[in-house]
Length: 173
Image (cartoon, rainbow, N blue to C red):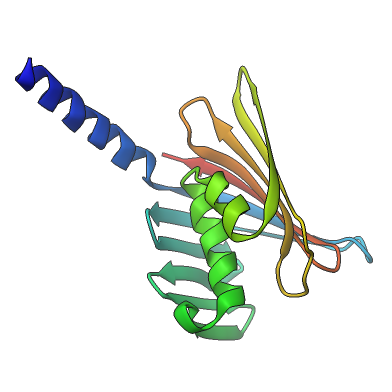
């Protein structure tokens, strides 16, 4: 019986780790509500929980967005940033929201960002809507997350103060 429980525990751990690590591709559409302007991008993504995310853009080529522990690095259309998230609460919350969303921990997003969370399950998986109770500049006002039956993220929409919305469609392996 002990051997069975040990095997079951190991199998559970392996399945959990697989759900927390993936590679794939993404497409991104950033829409400005006021002007209706949309900017499309795409690239490769790799994620390893709890705190490693790398998005390397193939269009526009050379752009990147990386979270590694307490650091966030990005270069978007020539604007480069290197932020220590342990000393920047706004960026830390945004990075955590992305990391938690990718790993399916939307309850932690709701807790950290003081948000209402609605979860709807259907035959295809799960749709999660988060609405922050207090909208603040330079932060997300809402998020939508879609997960497949296997628990993997398929779609993420980030809504920002000022009417900017960014949708990510993910194809993960």
